[in-house]
Amino acid sequence: MAARGDHPGVIAPPPVLYGGALAVGAALDWLVPLPVLEPGAGSVPGIALIVAGLLLALWCAGLFWRAGTAVQPHHPSTAIVTSGPYRFSRNPIYVALTAVSAGIGLWVNSAWMLGLLLPTLVIMQIAVIGREEAYLEAKFGDAYRAYKARVRRWL
Image (cartoon, rainbow, N blue to C red; front, side, top):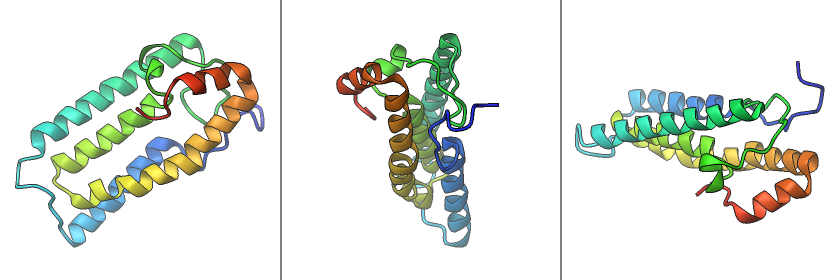
């Protein structure tokens, strides 16, 4: 179990936030279908985004595993991962989750799912990423501040 307080204190695990938005979108789509494209037009790009997002998430998880640090935000961080996709984005796992969510929305042709990505990203920014960055800055100090200065938050 993590030492009390040695974690960023995010409001919920990010996959739960993205999954919750997809579930709400699916419920709204069931109640009031709101397609965004012609039937079938989003299948190929949707599946491509899902596959790309899953591959990116797996790559990121592998980098965390090799660095000996936790992927889950409710566990302590023991290292700053700066290689692979972390050279270009401080949050490639969240980029991956966004791609998967957008891909699902396109695949099932749901404007609701796609539209709910915006509030999900706002919640992520405020209640997850902001807290994670404050935690990492407090824990790793100048090393994290230097990383933050040279790598963008998203893309």
